[in-house]
Image (cartoon, rainbow, N blue to C red; front, side, top):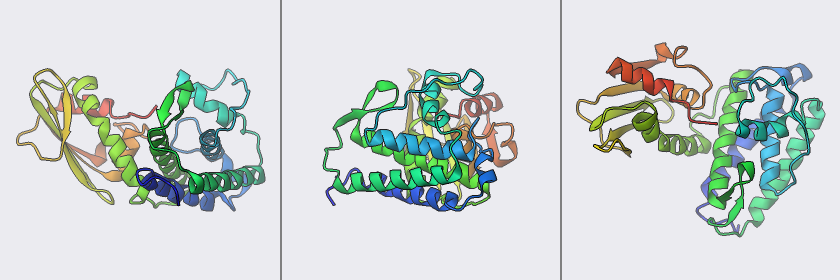
Length: 274
């Protein structure tokens, strides 16, 4: 194995989630491919199409030349338009075509991982023609595939994987977004603190402190007398942070203490995925 140690956890997380996805859809009846998922606007087929398409891009395959129809109302941003190309181009593929392409793509990606010898800092193609480091690309693939594994599990009634390697990648990535959510988006008062207490398969307690300049930082130490404290389970945290559910629909699963207006503002801006 020539994979750099920094990349190995992300490769392991991707492998765990892609295997789970492959197992879920391998014998899926035709009608189930059109089942709606928690990911806005996407069916089971669309999720699998996205996973295939993004891994094809990791392999360096050229992007499809395809024009999107005008009636995709869930597509409103340039990032979403970029992502939707790989999805829409496969919308009329049959179940055997989907599973065959998924299997072939996974074989190719596994071969790529076995032979990967590049440095984690190597610049590679990212979304919208941007360049990102190889480490960031691997990290985002692990996160993305795990989140979509959860979408498929929810749609197909196959719960699980909430404490898998991908879950821990997702935890770290989502936590990095919290200071901006609290300090900038929710406009928390300066010299204040907000505590997030998450329980379940993945547990953590984090404090976002807002300094006198209005900048937020993430800490592991609990704050005494925080402006707001939010307590919720890990699955609800993920679904809120990934825009799968609204704060209103999760009201019975989120315990809030402190300033109700600030708590509402934080939850209103909690979704951080594109």
